[in-house]
Length: 211
Image (cartoon, rainbow, N blue to C red; front, side):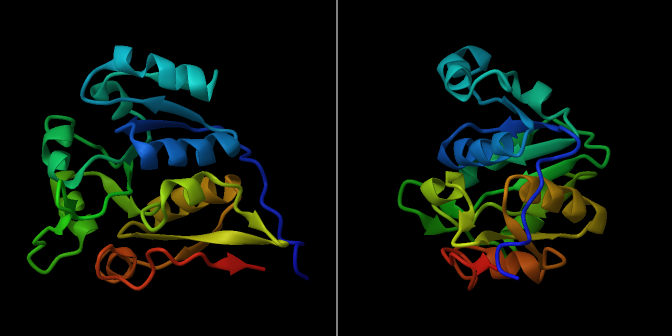
């Protein structure tokens, strides 16, 4: 029946490290905090630059260095496309840690699509993070919608996940479900990542609701 499939707050609290603290990272943090989790922000300017952000998000948020954020079992990567190689340089070995890739391959300031040489953007990110388990999600909406309550008229807004490690997709799916989203698993990065990718894929900007 519509409205009976209600999400549950996470039974296990996870601490998620954030590399990047921009609009998408903050919207994602809002969602994960709603699910009962903790977030650790980081950026290239150091923890001191994040004090007002931590104050805004409250006691289940904190700030650390990029290296500290990268040590958590789940890490969210959300930085400008051109900044990704520098942001993750020297952070390995990743030892099977999960990296949530929220990035779209657009190059500022003109937002020109990057040349991916036939790969999906998340496959490119995976190549930069040997030993990590990359999961693509949280890249298809503007920040305001991502941060909003996903419950809508008795249903739940849909988030998509893709990744080459089924266990990692399952972990991220549970995180998203604890935040109130319905989740659709698209499989591996080559196919699922192509569907999610902006520009080019059919899923970005779609506001779908599961009843």
